[in-house]
Length: 94
Image (cartoon, rainbow, N blue to C red; front, top):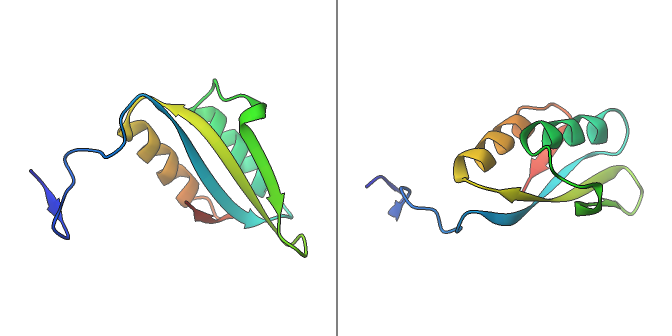
């Protein structure tokens, strides 16, 4: 059993397979949306456009994408989080 801050990390709280929603935030200009959607398709090719919601900030400077994917494992989600987090256009992934 691996512990991190007193928590067991060997088991996931999430039961797989499941639908999982990520919120990804970046600047509304540039390649943010295109790059994020490309990464989503790379990791979850079956993701339908109907499962992607866009919301602009009040002044339209930022864009948040809420994307629901069908995840089969924690490893699959972790790989997507890693790819998104290492993309310079992405400011935050929740």
